[in-house]
Amino acid sequence: MRLAFRPTTPADFRAGLAIIRDRFVYDEAAQERLLDLWSEVLGHRSGVSDVVEDLDRPPASRIVGFGLNVFVSDEFVREAKTTLPPYMGRNLLERWACGVSPILRPESIRRANDGDGLNVLTLHYGFHEWGYAAEEIVMISTMLLQSSLPAHRGYRLKEVLIEAYGEQEFSILLNAGLSLRTDYASTFSHTEQVVDPDRRAYLCGATRQEALGRHGTFAATFLLPASSPRFGFADRERNSFAMRWMEPPMRSWRGCSFSP
Image 1 (cartoon, rainbow, N blue to C red):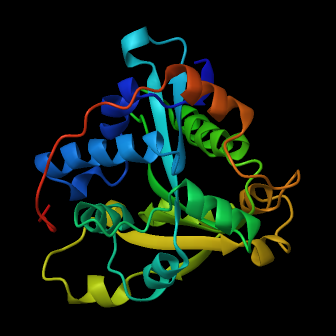
Image 2: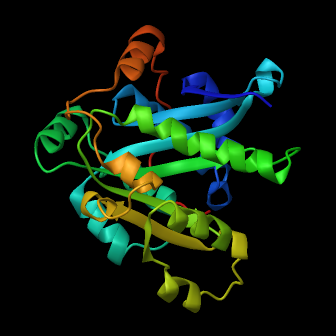
């Protein structure tokens, strides 16, 4: 297994959709809307995305990891940590479909970056588990975390949020220097359906201030700047999108909610 990561392109979306960890909450129509959302996020430079490839696999099946982070408003972060139900990706997709997306556009990103900083939400992530040994899966997931570091250099980050699914992923995030924000106890305790333990959601996060006391963790490396903040993508993102990005036509859809 030879792993490498690179910026996501529209041609990678289907492969990414097949492996995101929260795929179970979207029906077929919602999955198509996710592709539209991803196109808009990358086309408007409202987030960053990378794929991890296993270069030993055939070209058509090399993508074994996918991650997409977006910059979101302070209000959405407050709601996510207090009142929103589980499954952040679905929550955000529903708001986007209604035209009230909390994802920041470039001008808002610039203002926040020049101010007290930006909030980063890991909107989707996932990795290929079939046909790999346990230690190889760990290597893929670790590479996926590492891929997000250079993509966010140059931004003044103040808080990161990511949702874990299952106790094992929750434990990994705690070891990475993040803390539990909510376990959605009120939601899961009142549901009439038995929730698969691997689909049980936990919202985790860390602030820049918290990262100061967590030296050596992923949270500290991610949130504490290695260089002076500046607006815009790092060189690799800027060059990649300038040379390769062509935003596809957006499919139309009307409606403001859906049921998975």
